[in-house]
Length: 123
Image (cartoon, rainbow, N blue to C red; front, side):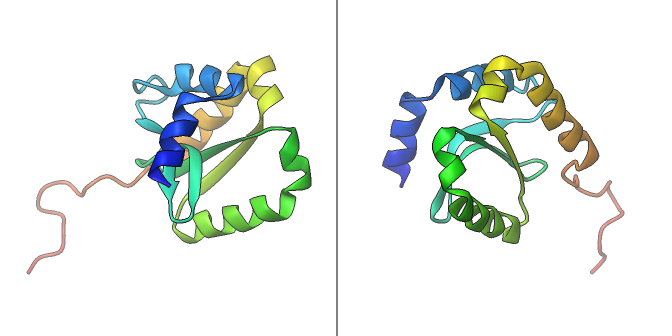
């Protein structure tokens, strides 16, 4: 799976390239995104561990793969991830709206940080 993920990183779609250019280097809400990340039997297009967010970009073939996509989403959600799906053409034609939708989820559901010093469980 790791080799496949590596190959997918080298052969991104235009939509993946465009979105990656805008997500990388903590450009969006200071979140560190990874691309083509292996999670169980799946490869997520984009992953941000801090709010446990997965972003999937779907091309035309996904219109006929709805059942598989739903199964994949259920699996990822069972691990505590939130999954956002966007059509490739939405990314290419209106990347700003896609980024705003992602930003709103990141702001609304931030990953819980560590408790301040002295506020954790005492032993």
